Length: 326
Image (cartoon, rainbow, N blue to C red; front, side, top):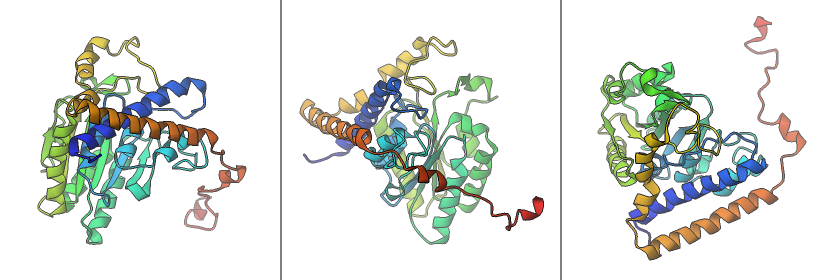
């Protein structure tokens, strides 16, 4: 079946949604013991931006990592195996849901520490510039990261050096359970980027096609060397609890009424409506087969050997630069 932009966007969105729904279904069995932060409801920024990127471009993300990992082409079998703690996982079974990486696909890492991958993305872009490469870096973070010093330091350095970084703020209005208005005196996120002389745009309704178009224009300008870093704010809304598979509208910090407009604007449903029923059905059938095979692979894969406890671990020798501190 020939692929079009709309079919690719729908495939990516539907694939992420169904993978995470499958994770939520299995999670109560304790087969997955890693904490999970689901992207259900807020898949569009990852899909729209990654569609605008080339294979040689790279992304850095947050602990809510599944959507970005899959949208950039991360290996699905390795992802599910990682959730199961298996040796075939993308981080050898050691990282879990919050620490996804697939360097071959350009997924350079996600982290449980808020804002920590933003300076890594800027450093990677600086390295690309020094090597004379034309690849672009996309740095994904939530609105809570704007309160980290590393965010401002990174924005300043990227603007100063005109680095090819697309800063993507997935603004879901909450830092865990704290509403943005209770944390920030101004809720205008774009003014933070513009303070560094950085072009900034907001896509308010979560439409994946609009996100793609704005991201494509930004990436093209940076790749051509006619623009320094760009900033993109994507208001979104997570449908499930901050961490875990359930809903949390009875927790007292937000209401179902607040979520309902966003649920009506479901990015997966809207993208699917751009396709014929026949094309949509074919995409869904293919994706469901792939997901079933990925979970079967994770189920039958072995756990790491005990020796793996001693690999990928840093230990100061006692004779290095820090020896004088002992």
